[in-house]
Length: 102
Image (cartoon, rainbow, N blue to C red; front, side, top):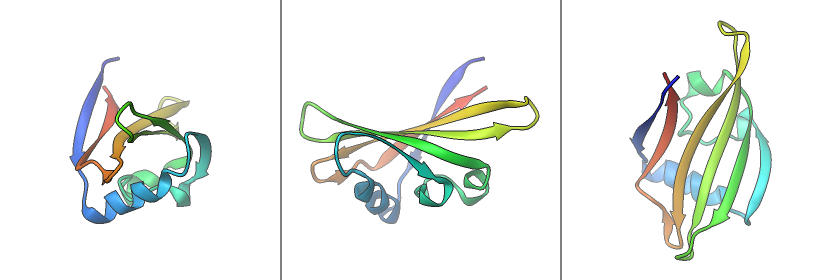
């Protein structure tokens, strides 16, 4: 199985949502309803929860990573759907990346 990056451009609304999720360095688990809109509605409906990890960058920003957990019925396994973005001291960057399993 090969992982490949899938970059997306973030709208200003999505960037605002991501900015609000950076509270302090560390991690926490969020429910499906707390996921930001970068996870499309149909995709989000398949996700039970996600781990959010925030870690400081060397330039005063924050690495923000999501590890979304969904049940893959076809494979009868849990699938992890990662998404990452850098939130600079002035706000979220203009793009984020999903890692797609292929």
